[in-house]
Image 1 (cartoon, protein in one colour):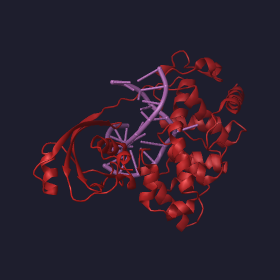
Image 2: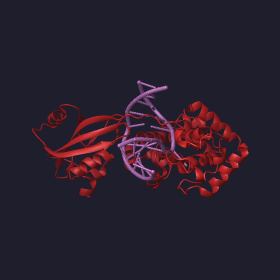
Image 3: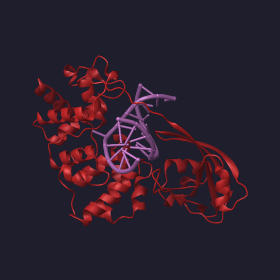
Image 4: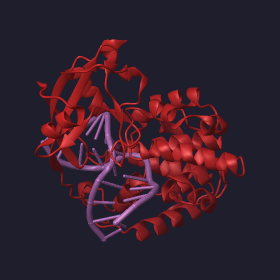
Length: 326
DNA sequence: AATGCGGGGGA
DNA sequence: TCCCCAGCATT
């Protein structure tokens, strides 16, 4: 019974897995990089960043010696920039201590930016530790297999561990097989149950949309004003602080009533030209930005700074984006 | 347990 | 439009 599920999934995986750059990779540094990139990021989006990152920082040592801004420059556009800052910190920490990455879940878990999933993924894939890596795919696959509408983290982890302990496959391969099924067949919408290798074992296949129940998301609306200060050599940029786009560079912005007045006061200006609106969405925020422009004596080329997509949009509207200054 | 954090792709 | 992605840190 259970062994049939295992062999069915593993056979399918050997035959149908996507060819990804990190597939079959056992180098801990490369495995770690791929797993961090894949946090809340689809494989297709992560691939170019994986290549760019390894070309720029081929080893953990090279990453440790880099400036944070150089790391963010490579990560630019990939989102969740805390990942890049933490990975950089991790490299410096490890190189300063042991020199090589920890080889166990427990050791990996203690590093910045490494949570339960990433620790288990790296330990199982790179070091063969028999531990289940539970991500969103695994949670969804198991919820459907067992018809759980409201799976608890404990329930999912325990079941995933039990399934892993019942296979002779390499733990990393088993974990990836389960995730690959979730990513390509057992998808959130319109799952391909007709082509599913384990449909015979699935209690939820009659109504896969019910498992697991969708989360509720609320999106806050924010009114912002941005000021593009344009000079002969480029635009005025400042380094953003705090949790939102922290470490990246961008144009001055203020939020809420009186935002424009505060911006003008900051730079001793009387007025600025309204260029137009820019709309930008984060998962939890909907930003409405009124973009103004004013002449300025200094400025720099935005190409040389790590910028978010948001700031790239604003600069494009002002005709001052990286593409306009190359 | 809930919330915040980017950006993009598929339906 | 809406959903959510090979999650983690913080509260």
